[in-house]
Image (cartoon, rainbow, N blue to C red; front, side, top):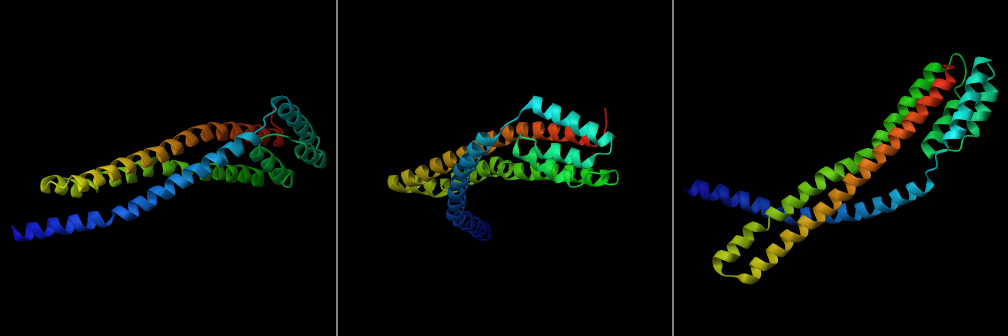
Length: 207
């Protein structure tokens, strides 16, 4: 019994010592989620997709590549006005135009796909980890709260329950922000990747 009591005491002490690190992580997650909201609004305001221009420039690039006029194709790509990732890819790909550079352009498109995935990683992690940390912040104060209840210390009970509820709310808030931003950005990047693939086919001279 003494061994069991010591083990339980160690477990309780270790779990209780995690409360303040958990609260700090939750506050950082909330601050990060607010910063991500601002970044998301800024990115949304800069998004601009002109399908007609994209199709026209794609056809001009395709015709120029077929006639081996790579300078003209590069010029057309530089005139592209679309979402920032698509424009950035067009300008980077223009430097690799040529019959011997098809592999480089394919590699470049894969690099942009990796970049888009990387942009989604942080919000994915936030949407998954923040509620878990919030749950830890909920469960850790319940031990002292139950002790306070057993001892008739209502003040200790109320304080720990307040901490438990607050950490739950903060964790869920950060998780919701991360989830919503991930879903919306994933749709954006799918569309950007579709436009990049269209330009890639045009640069390869495909019908």
